[in-house]
Length: 359
Image 1: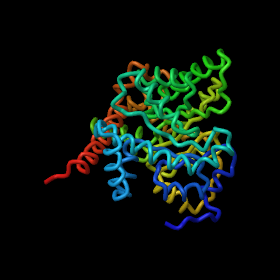
Image 2: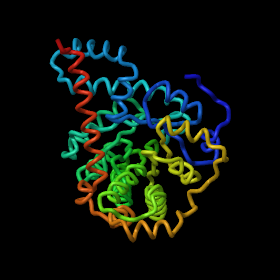
Image 3: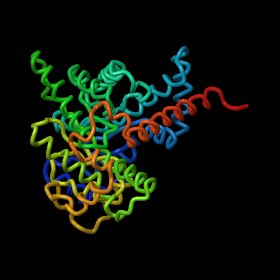
């Protein structure tokens, strides 16, 4: 991969003001190019980790064997997660200049808590604190589930900068933003510093769209397919407006891209746009110059049609569409947690195949 630094749509976007570009991958080659395009952050999760290991398998095969020698009592999972830590720290090092330049608001590498801990708020907060201690510029992902909301507040209080994940709806985003706010206020009440914390709340726009497309097919609902490309954007813009109204200090982050609108429609806001590298390349190819559109509403006719025909869009769009007790049962939440759990299992299997190869 040849790194290019000439002016591009992405570098123009980051020059427009407060909108920040993060790379939705910890792959060092992709991240280096993304930084050249203006990226000031990056992320890792179980799916991304497995992809990065496969992309450089000879290196990580050798390292897994070394770790097995260094950690003779470690399980396959413990060795796999040690690899996740190491590749995350390498990516974090690439972001150190941005971290220093932005005083902690950007320049962070997102590490995701183990989805197998999702049933315990304490276990999530404990692992988040551990990850945050690995490097100054680590930001930690905790899911916007019932237990996750509790863990988000507690981890924030402990000084962990949060990136809320497994979040698809206005109610989840706002609940997470308010949990972070409670954690920040608890720190402030005890005289603890929050000035270098840069929390973000992700709304996985494309995964909401994906789930609504499934419900449309399942329930045989007649709706213009193009409208389904706007659902996540509409939810994101509504949550963003509520964050500003309520004075929540976390930034919103757009993730899980399924179309370029999930970037172009959000430019101009004080938000993070975090496309996978392949989607950054597609945005780079746009002929039109990028302009601020965060304050431009989604066509009301589209929102009205989605709202009238899709019960799960109503749950996603209304700020009181779900309570925290209902977050775990939302279809997109279940599908995403299962995908992350499957990636955990795949990582375990990779370690097993290296340490105990088939005869």
